[in-house]
Amino acid sequence: MARTVIPFGPQHPVFPEPIQLKLECEDERVVGAVPVIGYISRGIEKAAELNPFRNNIFLCERVCGICSFMHALCYCQGIEDMMKVEVPTRARFLRVFWAELSRMHSHLLWLGLLADSFGFESLFMQVWRAREIILDISEMTSGHRIIQSTNVIGGVRRDIDKEMAKKVEEMLVQFKQLTDRSILPTILNDPTIKERTVGKGILTKEQAELLAAVGPTLRGSGVASDMRMTEYAAYKEIGFEPVVETASDSYARTLVRVKEIYQSLDIILKALSMMPEGDIAIRVTGRPEGEVVSRVEQPRGELIYYVKGNGTANLERLKIRTPTFANVPPLLVMLPGCELADVPVITLSIDPCIACCER
Amino acid sequence: MENEITVSKAELITEVQKMLAQKAMFGTATCLDLGERFEIIYHFELEQGLKMRHIRVSLAKDDTLPSISNVYMCAALIENEMQEMFDIKISGIALDFKRGMLLAKESPKTPLMKGKE
Image 1 (cartoon, rainbow over the protein chains, first blue to last red):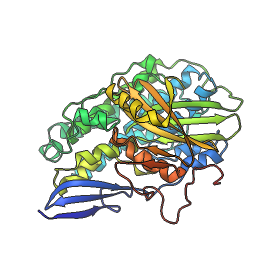
Image 2: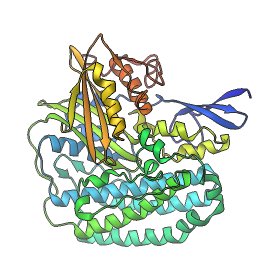
Image 3: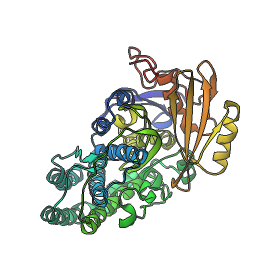
Image 4: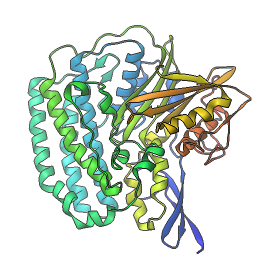
């Protein structure tokens, strides 16, 4: 059969950011895919060498808007590790609080976009209505709905007092009631969602490991890997078990994220209740020298920062490996064999963040 | 860094194959411009990502590095990126974008090399 190459993107209704997939098709069936990226590469790694290392926190926060807190956390942890800084316990709990809040709003953003991609507009609106509660908590505790910007080298810049913590708990109860009532039953039972996601975009456990998938893409294929298991910040005290699904399809990846929303809610409540009194930051002097690898679990998967300092105010090298960059090769294995109409859902199932990917 | 070994260019593929045999997952690779030469660090993950292992290779600037993408296909993207950002020569990349993956034609060439400020 004759093959046709169909450009999917860079401008497409399901992509919030530009990326192109060159789809090789036989009739309506995809038989191969090649990614075309580079539309929004901003040279952030180079900029990080030119900035004083303390200013890089703000730069890292802008690798990606949605995961901004995670980028700053990963960077700060790397610098703190290099400079042998011990962060106050309260600050570590506060970092977990904002990290999980980021995960919740990221997963909810994605879930709304997924619903929108197959025309389930009412679910899209319900999900984003629930997400507003999380964004309100973010604004109340950090001063910003998305870019919390609370990390500093040596801790955090904002605290949460008891009154605010109580208000957060009330808002999370409200969020859980709304999610239990109008989102979870739909995800679990609606035939439309299953029709569009079950059996679509299969990534076997062996493929996921060999192609180095990360995050919900990896855990949806039955691999219990999550950087929170390395017990950074306060995950050791709070305790953590990864969410794993074994069906290896787009629905499995959806379930991982939905369960992680609930898991993050529990972690936030634990963090608030277990958080000890004390300082939220220590003063850090000196300049970083040496090299470290820092890793955190971003909503989309493992984030890796390689940081090399040379004892001056500027870094020698900052290398950022984002989860979407890691999940592109697995995507190229998921697509062959699918129908053209399934490409949007399968592509979204890795939760692509192109700004992250290209930096 | 902990769990790091330094190997020669000739030993690289053998060492990477050993990582595959141990079911290590490929993390990423970092290229460093050290003036006279490049240094490339390959980062691997073991035990569901709980542990890391690093392989460091030193390379003269006019030398060519063999691609590891025939062992770990997923390394092809970062190898393409290193070629574009550092002007490092890598042979046999499984999916070669010919230095057109991230940078546009009018973009500054090899921007991550030192002295390109």
